[in-house]
Amino acid sequence: MTFERSTDWALIRAIMTDPALYKHGADDFAPPREAFEPWQHDGIWYVIVREDPVNEHPGALLGLFILAMNSAVQYEIHTRLLPRAWGPRSVEAMRRVCRWAFAHIPHCRRIVGNVPVTNQLACRFAERAGFELIGMNRKSYMRGGQLVDQACFGVSPGDV
Image 1 (cartoon, rainbow, N blue to C red):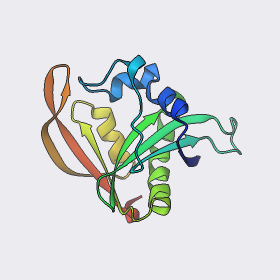
Image 2: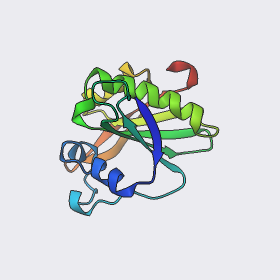
Image 3: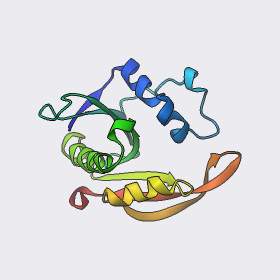
């Protein structure tokens, strides 16, 4: 897999609004899919992931990861992998993008992610990718008119 920071807003928007992805990553306050625009800020790294050039489908788009600065050393990760990357490849992509981030984002020493506890698949995904459950943020995500808890996961350079 290859990783590259991108400011191709049309590509980023296309991935983030993919019908297979948008409904899973949107809370009750997200705009309609057609109206969504990605935030543009220097503290947000949109990292495009593609298939390795040596694989069967070289350069095939697998999706993107969003790393948003929380502090100089900590970034919050969001995953938008397309269906072709789901399964074991998604776990490997998450591990690899974390190693990439620690190597390419200045001062990045911690990556965290918040997952609604109602999304058990995403919680298991974080754990399989090497993230450790570090806490619970109670009633912090509105989905379907209900406040739900979010599990907070974290990883440091030696963990992946």
